[in-house]
Length: 121
Image 1 (spheres, rainbow, N blue to C red):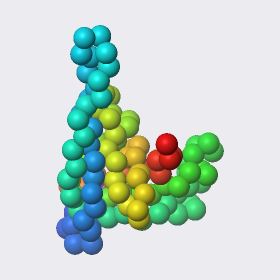
Image 2: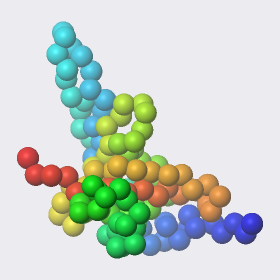
Image 3: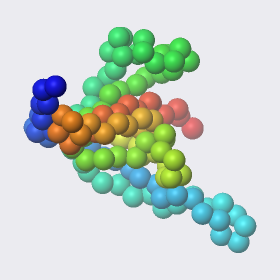
Image 4: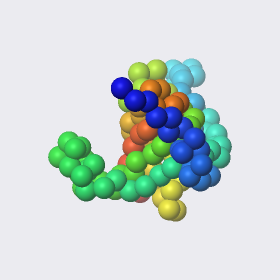
C-alpha cells in the first residue's frame, strides 16, 4: 500500500479559525457548574459537506448544515468518551459544534472531522 503524507497539504491550505473549548462541568455544593470557556485560534481546512457526503449520514442528520474539517492539530468532538464537551468552531459567522473526529496517521499526521451548525437559543 502506498502511503502519501497529506499533513503538509492540510497545513498549507488551512486558514485561521477561532475554536472555543469548554472545560468539563463539575459539581460544587451539589450544583452542576459549567466549565470555563476558553478560545484559541487554530489552522483548519473547512468546507461544506457535499451531497455525496451527506447521503452517507443517517437520514435524520441529512437536513442539517454540516461542514467537513481537516486539521494538523487534534480537536475535541462530541463523540469522545472522556466527557469533555465538543469544541465550537466559528465559521462563516455561525457556530458549528464538532461532532466527529478521526486520526489519519497512515497519510501523515492529521485529523478529519465534521461539525454541525448549532441551533439558535
